[in-house]
Image (tube, rainbow, N blue to C red; front, side, top):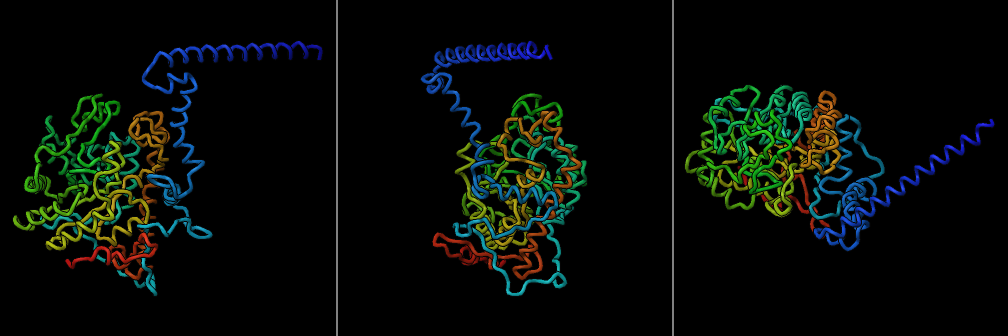
Length: 497
């Protein structure tokens, strides 16, 4: 007991010395930062307001995180709001997605889709499932996809090994296809046993010569794999129409360099377009060339800018013969794209799906090509209502990348291009990847896909039809500026095919 006051006194002295040292260090740091800020001229705020001016950058950096968790309402965030992310989180865990006390969605906003329920919905015993759609009637190995909802292109390199593995295994369980993205075909795409759509970007990663032209031998080796069902030639994507893909040098590991045909550590800059394709005729020539090698369905992915080029494409197809048509067209939305891209291209170039899809569907029908060419739609189709809407508007299939990223655990940290993804999805930092278990996440991928299809079918049955693909423009109305809704059929009359 007699030792307590001296011991307490010693502890207090040590604590006081420690606090004094911290204050001294803080003063030294403040002086150093003051001198540094006053001597630099790149940042006027820091120069004019040394030390305290640094807090502006800190608050700007932290602002998006505070808004996401504390200030933004459930339906306010961009590009995806909390309500959408929460729905996917629960769907991917196979949890119930029912709500209480009414919708939190503002149904008066222009552009809101309202599905037209039938007076007498379909009973389960009355449902007659239609035959699956065939893609590629003129090829040796056509493809009949079992799912109308599938995984869009995400390259190995842009996303991590465990993320690709989880997607591949989940796609197999859900019986949907998985698009490789433009980064080439990796062993991890194949490991899960899923159907694969091989995407050929402008750099032709995996089947390229050094000048980004096509290496036919490499392409044949890829397409000879039984899991590869189709080839998608990427002309453009929603995030950056008119600009090739970019993979930072820090992500070009020895393995990725080998898969893509690149040099280790060097950034991968894809050309703005395919060197072989500068006009519509050359596009059809290249499709025929690839199809002759692959002997499987071949189509292309693009962002629509106007109907004029689609008209030109259809005229050229009919001039050459229907067998020369692409087997499918994937339309990406101007507001789509998981990858990092320049803001002007991401924000202001290309048409959104709501306008582009009816245009493409109408022009194909006008030229009697709609039954020949399948339409695939990508770009922010992450919820059942979004998928149902594009099926109403004329799509045969819907694909999403970001929806499946959320199923993997993405928190929309907006760090996809910095190799610092906190969930391990878009980083090659093994410490960060450790939190992404491919086995566990594959079940979430499959559950999300099942949930979307189940609820799209639920919408279809409420509208009085047997299956999702039987939805048409008469089954949805779009809210206008006046607050009243107008039938999609009235906005975009559907030409009979």
